[in-house]
Image (tube, rainbow, N blue to C red; front, side, top):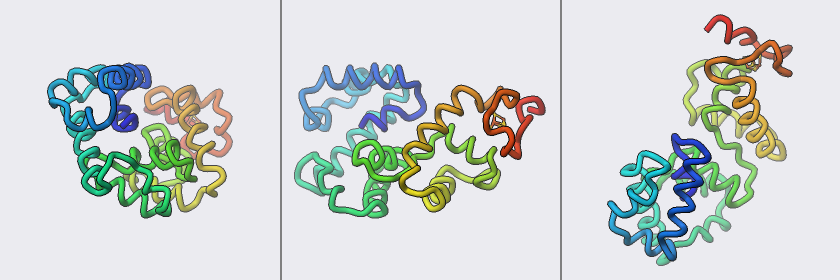
Length: 189
Ligand code: SF4
């Protein structure tokens, strides 16, 4: 649910919404049966309240219907592909969210592709220009060794925030400049 809240918002706003959610509801059953407008109001700090509240309740409903209770314990018995397919089949859960559940929740060797990872993978020439997030996920999780995926995910996000930003990449101080086909992209727009 934290990963649903994190879509298209800052870490701070996600954390505020998550804290409010934990404070306002005793358990996931209460969230699942909450009045939608109440849930929207609680998670408002994360933005997209209507969409995220619907996604959270749909996910909880689906899990409860499948398992008879709200738990993702059954994912432990699935391989990475099966778990990813199960999660992305839940309405409102995309590839990145599902990959985050696997990576951070289940400690699986899966590399989630967020906006920073996708931008870096494109600029560094690891995927073709214009590749979708799903295609980028597929390529990186096929070509990057499992033992490196988690650390690479974190490193690319850190580099994307500090140096290779979307609008003003500072190529002049970038440690990857020697290997980057897009060096100077900031100066040329
Ligand atoms: S050289 Fe520039 S475009 Fe390439 S990774 Fe570094 S900051 Fe990004």
